[in-house]
Amino acid sequence: MPPSYRNAIYIPVILFYIPALFGSGFLTWHHGWRSSEIWFVMVTFSLTRLVGASLQLSTIVNPDSYGLARGAAVCAVDGLSPLLFVALGIVGRLQDIVNKTEKTRFTFRDYRLLYLLLTVAMILISVGYAGVTKDEIRNGIRDHSSVSVAAAIMYIISYAGILYGTVSMVLYHLPEVEQGERRLLLMLAISQPLLFIRTLYMCLDVLGNRVKFSPFSGSVTAFLCMALIEEAIVVAMYQAAGFSLRVRSKEEIEQAKKNRHDNGGHRRIESDVELNGQR
Image (tube, rainbow, N blue to C red; front, side, top):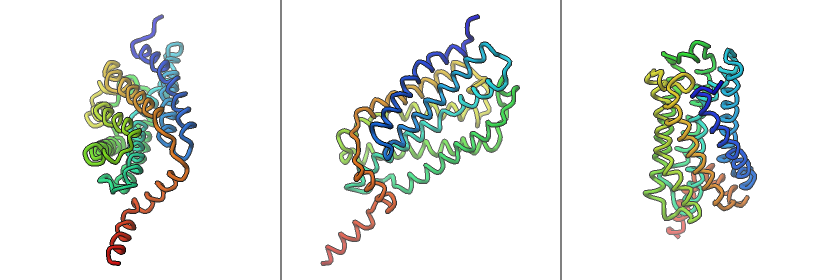
């Protein structure tokens, strides 16, 4: 018996994310644990996609298993959080570079706020889908809980913040970005329309209550063209940029963390300049 359309799309997912998993693992090792938050998130995302695809394909031989279907559904939903975390992490890396010479318009306070917002959104969306029933897996969720709606709103705000951080880097801080890091900034900028489509797909499901855009029971074509393809392209672009990045030294990483703790250190720098000017 040939696999259904929904099952068939998960075959290339497995073929793509196996090398993506090894690539992310290598980047985590290559850049060192201290500066590998970006690549480690991609490791976990690749694992999630592989587990979800395996569970979905397992339903071919056991189509009546609620456990397999529920596991595949939960994995299918969790695609936006990791991508936004990675994009935010890239913005943060670029911040560290620019803040060596000048203050960025997208501040460290903005970064922390978005990180917290994304974390809460990820937890809420997981809670919102945790109790999905067998009927909802087959027919979709027609009325999402307030928890899921709140998470969707947080995702929109988070994406808007990441977009602002990306645009500000391109428009105002491009000369300060090191030559080797500009490829990463380019990939971040190119990925923004793809992240928008992925965010829109989630919003049409959760906020619009349009079952067609449910990742586990809606249109397979919509899921493929508005979620899976975008995710794969973003992962491929970020990894391609990651292989070309220089490895930051331990001292540089520690200084970047210190700058973040001091809100970039610019208050201290500005105070020193004023004192020196008075002298």
